[in-house]
Amino acid sequence: MARILGTIASSFEAASAFESIATATGTGSSGTITFSSIPSTYQHLQIRGITRTTTNTPEPGNTFWDVTFNSDTGANYARHRINGNGSSAGALGESSQNACRIYSVGSRGTENDRMGACILDIHDYASTSKYKTVRAIGGINVNAASTNGEISSSSGLWMNTSAVTSITLTIGSGNFASNTQIALYGIKGAA
Amino acid sequence: MPATYEPIATTTLGSAASSISFSSISSAYTDLRVVLVCQTASNANIAFRLNSDTGTNYSYTLLYGTGTSAASFRDTSITRGYIIAADNAATSPNWNLCTMDIFSYAGSTNKTILTNGSNDKNGSGTVEAAVNLWRNASAINSVTLLAWNGVNFNTDTTATLYGIKAA
Image 1 (cartoon, rainbow over the protein chains, first blue to last red):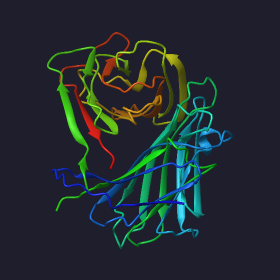
Image 2: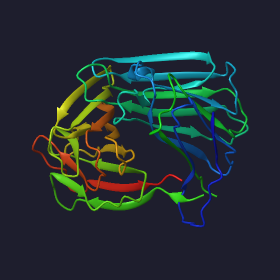
Image 3: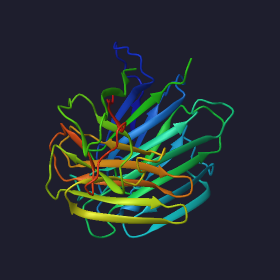
């Protein structure tokens, strides 16, 4: 498991509400990426990344991230998605799951020059009174006149009021390929 | 923590124009984001080109909802990327809101771009999301937004380019 500590600091200070906390890259040998020791000093978090899996088999809709918080793998998550594969649209909702699931985030191993992309927002992550809500947009396109491309909008709920201090992304199939790059950002609220 | 999400440039049209370009983009960031608030004189697809590439090197997969149904569409090997189907005319107070996220734009793989658009007219309209691929491994140094179908962006159309840098 690749563990990425949010400890990268800079002497550069600017008046911006959007700050970079940490960046993880794929190793090719691990299917998980964890951002830990996340400070509670922001209002929201955003994860942005490009992803490729090491396997060649999954269809784009199955190149997902399972997202868990604070190492909780209990059935404390719910999730929805709407997706389009170029010829049809679909929707799915699931309750009492072991993770939030963010779809269409990555390309396959053979598509080593074409990356899936995703933006995941985690709202009010430091609240100790609210369940946590996430939403994401993910997509992969390989210039194929088939269903080998997909765009998805995903949402998720973690039914826990604890502040989020760690986020684990587990890829749906294979491992995170070496040209995977995923970054965690913090978004400040007004003082 | 290093602050980021920096505005690079903003363009507000003082007169109608068929395109808006950002050029000489620094490679100092990880991702780029364009926020476009636009009107067109008549129905038009809002498109984009990167590094002025007019070749058939773009493709996209689109998901959209019209208010009564959801659908999906794709196009391959075309000459421009896709942002939104816009049809808010100059006489309307309604504007299209579009975002365009360009990932790892200075990297050495082909470029993936997520676009999101809304076009709401109190009784009709669409919400759209698309994933685009530009099959070129070059660093992106210019982004051109295009009002397709031979129409123009209206006056007061605004586009802002941001840079986002990962730690």
